[in-house]
Image 1 (spheres, rainbow, N blue to C red):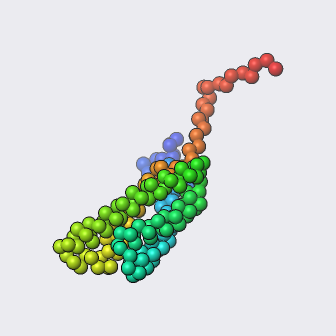
Image 2 (tube, one colour):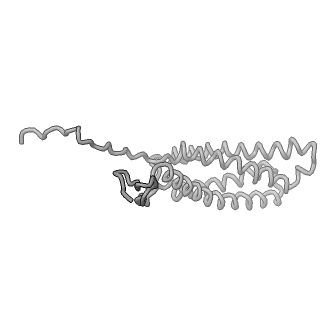
Image 3 (cartoon, rainbow, N blue to C red):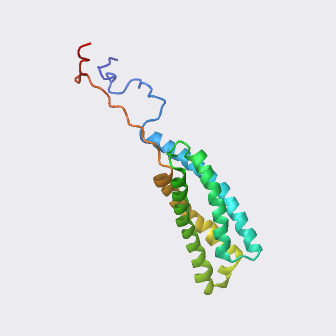
Length: 188
């Protein structure tokens, strides 16, 4: 069997294919980084969610109004989430203006809270007028903690990456080609 210059054997089949680099490139690298980032975000969010759930139910059992309990529990969980995301999830992002970053984080989280409160209000006060079972603590937890938190979490992940913990962009080096010459150093 003879090989031509392209690695093909004379019978039309390919010969041994050289191994590719073990390092992922391009899209694969970005997807792995995104998955790692989402995993860390999810871990921080899981802890914050547990704190939110605990405080929400403690306040409900203590007689707090539903929306007030959700607002208070979210504020505590947000503070915890900011610390976890800033110092772990996106620790390599921009961290130049702490006050601005903290404020932006809370404004975006307030929008996420609004999403969760809207889900809870629609369930408890809107649909609950038609179906009283939707005014129970179980229904409030499903609407506010599961549906509302899930919708708010999607918004938060996107907005935190985009506006709060932006990745530091490192300019890529421009590869030099053989046709481009550098200027001569001049007289010494």
